[in-house]
Image (cartoon, rainbow, N blue to C red; front, side):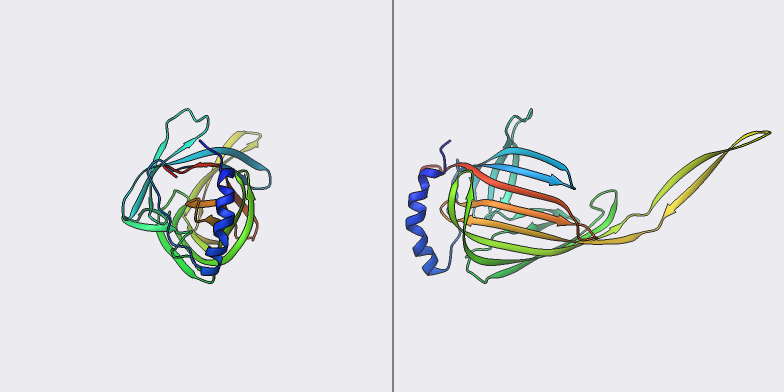
Length: 244
């Protein structure tokens, strides 16, 4: 695997042309292309973990990218994944193939925007329904520095809202009443009625056309009280572009 830094000279030379055109078309992704990211996950006020994940392209078609994800030091083999040709995330939602995340929409031009919305029933035991509405916008070029080096990247930002309907639940509370004649166990059953929770989310990616993918990505989720519950940050460490 080679470092991204040898590519910096070519990147610097090509940026003025891209900036003048104010547009970036979809890259040519090839089998064997590989990117390694340092991924940091912050949960709540003190939760923290970091991984180093390698993404390797297996093959591409007109509509999809087939690739593997391998975490450094993981006891199991790589996970095989399918993404859209624009690196969008597509999965089954209520029996229908649905785009749930689309950080890139080519061609990329400053000011361009698009939306991703979907509703999923019974996504987990706690929620009977989840709705996600996200608005993406191309902000323009911005300098960003990651472990792989310093890049002039196209920044895309996204903000949105999530709504969850909480499933009803039943809890059992037992207590003992002690008197002169002995003890009696009292059991109370409490049923929680369905309720609704809402929150916000924020995403940002810094995409470099010559790299073929983003060099940095941030994903934040905020709870109903406006407090950040989780932040995931991925930063490019190394890359290897097959035959280039």
